[in-house]
Image (cartoon, rainbow, N blue to C red; front, side, top):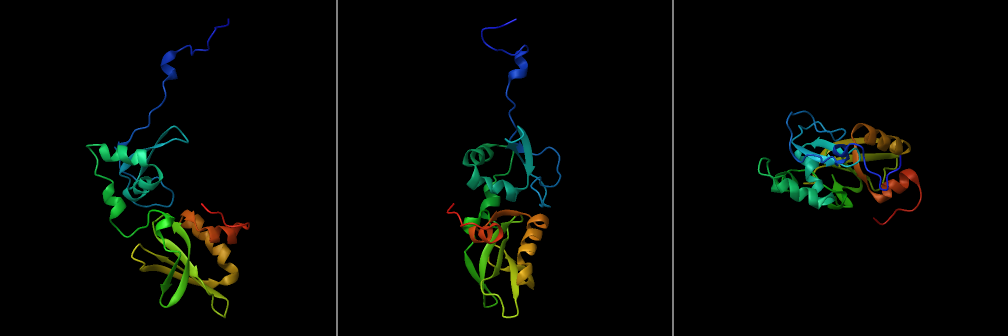
Length: 187
């Protein structure tokens, strides 16, 4: 039983799924890993053909990564304008916003990563003579939030721990090179 053009037996099953964009119906935690803020918006998740619920901060990251989706959210009448989350607050949205070097308590620090919580992770640009390296997270105002000092030999282990437990949006090219080898890429 051959047909000249392949068609589904039931044409209603052929419709494409359209993920919803808008406010969440039930409030829970943001579905971006490692985030403990309340979800506010539903967005498409193309990898699975459905949608995902994010907090305001993680929706604000769409402003840079998916301009079309960002504009769809802004045009909705029944949701708070997500621009509020993109321009207010003390969290970085992209690694490009994070300075490559800063000074914390007089110590020169290098950019390592942008964490899931929107804070930037820095490490000592010049480790101490005793083999210690300091890692510091800072907010958009470059105010230190958390700090830890560890053996330079354990720096890679710490960064892996940080990625697994705190979550990382993006690694600096030099940090990626130090962890995985090879030449840093120009993104």
